[in-house]
Image (cartoon, rainbow, N blue to C red):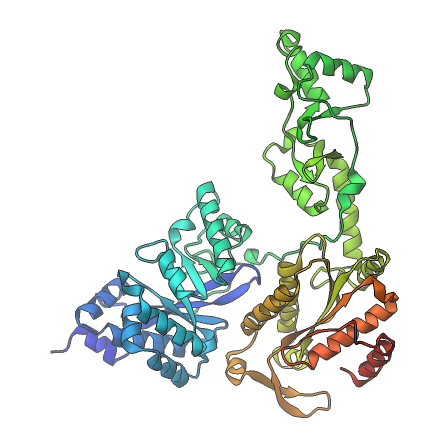
Length: 587
């Protein structure tokens, strides 16, 4: 006698709902998780009851494979973009093997590159050599792998360390009120740091409030999923527009706090209140004194108006006259002189005691007292900086444009110190723009800008946007090869978000070249030409620009699209000539 489950399996009576997963850095959809339900008028509508019944009737593998097949078909029918997250239990995966999953994808016309196999586990049998082997096999076929509900049930750190998944989904417990729970924030931040070191991405599930999303984003969580972004639906709705927050952080490439430094002679912590009152009377123009110990380490600030207010209290002289300033001082924000204007201003804004510290902050160098800074001077400098950046910034990425790039390179040459220059350019970008549209083209350019900020956004580095798909890096860091390779590798993963499914299946797009001839173009790739400059070369700014352009051209024609120029063998006299020839050729 046939059961209700048999009828559901025979007639494909499975509803497929899709819930979006939001990319906090790219401000776009990473993909959708497919969630299966039984018929709406059935007792097996609930997924819990549906899959429990399948286990009882020993038809779990048949049901899960049907859900996967229908999810792929409907994902393509609805023309959804991004990756498709498909749930499967490890026990079913072990019984089926990888071949049915690959064949199902091929029959649906879907590339494994778009599919994330999400392991759900209610039993502790998910660890072991067999599951490790099959996960490796999935990855070799192009599938990505995720662990579901880390921190709940049997999903734990051991499973994470054994399987080395591409994604780890944090249980909804961690998202709930994470903005109000410091312990959760610290714990999730530690997991996020661990994930980065293991080459894994974290997805925070159960995000329902904007405050939770913003906190997760600030912690470093790149992906979020939850009702805030959309409930499971047959056809997912658009994201709320208020979630699309552009990263408009200016590039900090200097040490501007030197200009704000005001030196005031410090006082030792054992100085008495009476002694400081006398010092303020003798120097009426002085509004505060820094309190510094014998090793030059700042302890606090003694504000004139705070001290005067205490002495004006009843019995103030008796209470505070002989007390040491160590008990009377305020604890201010302390910053390093090499921090950027933006970071310092953010520290002051975020400080809970800002109203007490609105006038002064301590500036140190190597942990020792260097001087004081005034908030009003900082804000004035920051305003000037923003106006200058806005004047010369690229309007699409808000990175410094041509004028600041030339200025930074010229100043770097004057310093007579070695530095690294890199020219980043997109291969086959024009046909992508023509076929996929300028809106997606702008998104690809923004992606490059975000990755450059992510990997090289340090105070001693400079990131510039020449225009179009051309970017310039000036790096002052010893290790740059690994970050460049990692950035290029991440670009190759992220670019898939901006292609149509048919383009990914074809591993390229069909368009017209500059001569109007129709042909297939490969997926857009990031070329990086590197020029390690050393002062002994004694080049002019024009020669440097020409040499860097040559490195970029060679990178575009090099397998792997990364090229580092050899200073010992390169003929710098031919750089300008070569650049002119390639410019005429339209490369």
